[in-house]
Image (cartoon, rainbow, N blue to C red; front, side, top):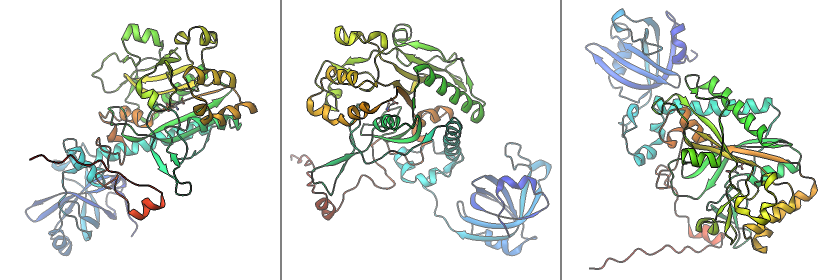
Amino acid sequence: MQRTYVSETPQKIGEKVLLQGWVNVRRDHGKLIFFDLRDMTGILQLVVNPKVAAQAHKNAQAVRSEYVLAVEGTIKKRNEKQINNELPTGKIELEVSKLTVLNKSETLPFEIDNTKDVNEEKRLKYRYLDLRSERMKKNLKLRHKVIHFIRNYLTDLGFTEVQTPILTKSTPEGARDYLVPSRIYPGKFFALPQSPQQYKQLLMVAGLEKYFQIAPCFRDEDARADRSPGEFYQLDLEVSFVEQNDILELIEKLFTALVQTLTPEKKITQTPWPRISHREAKTKYDSDKPDLRKNKQDPNELAFCWVLDFPLFTEQSEEDFFYGSGESKWAPSHHMFTAPHPDDISLLVSDPGKARGLQHDLVLNGVEIGGGSIRIHDPKIQEKIFELIGFTPEQKKQFSHMLEAFTYGVPPHGGIAPGIDRLIRILASEERIAEVIAFPLAGSVSDPMMGSPSEVTEKQLKELHLKVEVPKKKKKIN
Ligand code: ASP
């Protein structure tokens, strides 16, 4: 018999069906045994009546929560008194005629219907159980739909999705790199991309014109409230022959259509999205990510805005210096490929701190959802920026491929990279970003389920020409 999904059962009253899934809850009512059976599409009540199916009833007695079952029976209407209008299957039940246990289950370490209060390490250690909850499945499905929508929308506009390398070279986004030792080149390392920034610009040199990627990005940072530690996903996007306004309009249209289609209960506070200068944001809202919601208690309000006209440089912090910047007073506000405002080019010489950049930040409900910019496409200006941020000749050499590429006919181009996890967290009305990621690292930047990071064998280290020196634990003083 072909399998029926729970979601199809309301259309099958009076029919004989086969269902497969997990036991959500089991209740005994005297002679009758009731189960809720859960599959990926929903939950359905099963009734096992010894008078109807003696053997099934016998089998059912051993069944516990989370057992995996195959059940055959007839879909029937429930008695008036038993109707549950909260459930799509609340008016029906399956009268079981045959019940087979496909697999047993131990008692779970926590109840899956209420995992919000379970501690994080435990939830992540048993993430495959945590993901059985309706809430987590809903979040993963929303995530899938958002990515599917974006792919279709951009494909229809002539964009090409391109996968860029994961084993690459340090990309300067201001964070610490994850490094991968090379076996073949002793003492040399790949870096995991902090973003595909250089590749997407090189794809513009290649003439692709409209690129996007649902791109994994890796940054070795401590856990932050607005970013899952270790890795996260961006809608990475780049377009040639555009002005800043084209990028802003593209993203505004895309996200507006996405919200209307996938989360129509959400209402966008203001359209077109307000565009605020960095200075205005700072003076009026005391923040470069202003929260423009009218009612901050309303989980269905979405207040998007653009923040523009950022200063091209900020005063360099110790971190900027350590993670890839040059030795100078200035560090790029966004990154070193951001174009200066055309009216401010002369300021690069006279007063660099006053120069504005063609950067655009997208803010949603007070959270920075993504940033981007129109890029420098003049190698001379690019060199000037390298100089202003204090690059040594050695550091400049690291980007010589970009400067060289730009000598072969680079189109004017620009892009943006909205964070997928951040956006979905807000669309799913979740407080924590980990709730919309299938297998996130814990706040401790480790994976309690896989047990990573983990030690490797001597042989592996040797092949990689590595020696490990683990800091000694402090000796106890008696
Ligand atoms: N690469 C930038 C980032 O990851 C985004 C961009 O400029 O497009 O923030």
